[in-house]
Amino acid sequence: MKAKGSYFKLLILSFGLILSCKVDAQQINKHIIETLRPIALKEAAWALKQKPVTVTAESCSRSAGGKHDFYSEGDYWWPNPKSPDSPYVQRDGMTNPQNFVAHRLAMIRFSRIIGALGSAYKLTGDKKYVEQAAKHLNAWFIDSETLMNPNLQYSQAIKGVATGRGIGVIDAIQLMEVVQGVEAMQGSSALSKKTLDGTKAWFANYLTWVSTHKYGVDEMNAKNNHGTCWVMQVACFAKFTGNQKLIDFCKDRYKQLLLPSQMAADGGFPLELKRTKPYGYSIFDLDAMTTICQILSTPADNLFTFETLDGHSIKKGIAFLYPYLKDKNTWPFPHDVMYWEEWPVAQPSLVFGALAYSNMDWLKTWKALNHIPDNAEVIRNLPVRHPLIWIKN
Image (cartoon, rainbow, N blue to C red; front, side, top):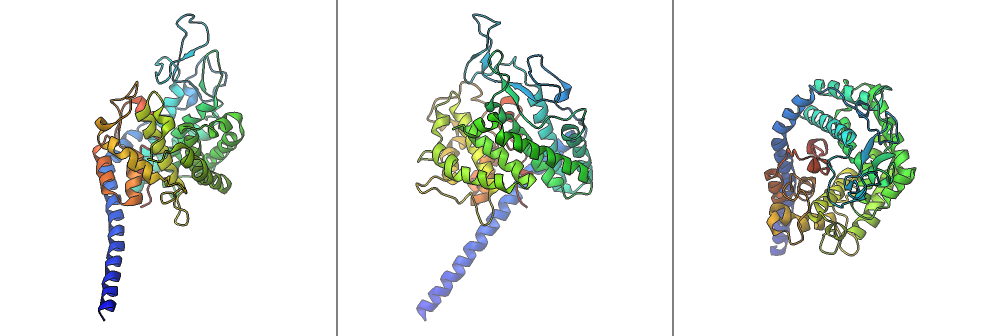
């Protein structure tokens, strides 16, 4: 009888632990909503007042593209001091403030607007947020006068060197929160079928370009955070458009290539640690990988619990970087050449990790960090700025 009683005690204890885990996940979700609600509603109030501004609003004489083509210039390329009219030269890690970034800023603004409106709609169900979002979606993806062509053929150009580069594909990560915002709002009657179908058609066309054009293929094959960001954006857009072939490709690439080739045994990212901004790039690559897990995980195939044969996992990556997100002063590697003081902010790796593993320590650190960064470099390297539209609740 003793053995039988012990068995039932163990069963009750196990059941209690299961319930405890569920409560923890619900509590974490509640904390996230409580933390973000006032921020999201305030930003949405701003977004309601904004008029659409697309790539057609400004142009650059150095662009080889047309009025509807996105154009940006390589951040770390500068005029040659020995000959100002000659091709630009590289200064890795040092951003040239004179380069053309108007289109990138317009895209980031667009992302902020849709992200804020999607978050507010998710919180309130008020269709006014959807109606405002539709104006911006139509301007960027449907209106023939203002739309952006569905490619990044002229992104991250270098004067005298290249009219565009594969490395420029990374600029499209700014469109992920547009997609996530639309997904949060697409059940509303205020979002017309024409607008939704037109938006999905635009991203379907972009996916064709980014998975077949030389620049897209080059970026896919990049060995550092650029390769990670190709998978992250393609996974996001493929899920939105229902492209199962690319979804499966991204899952396989994460498991078979990104995780085993970019992560060290201790959970760090050696390719990023060798850069001139080892702290910022490590944060960025971890955020991107964690976001891939958030996008692609399903009950039947949870990337948060996936582990390679030699023990690489996203949980190990978050655990490696967490102490340095909690206290940057403990960072044992060289400091970044620029923007060292601006990092970290409320990183998506912490909030997604807290949800996936019911980790209250990660959540507390995320809550204490800056949720409203205003530095342009930080904003463009923060792939998730509106977590509410990413989490399932």
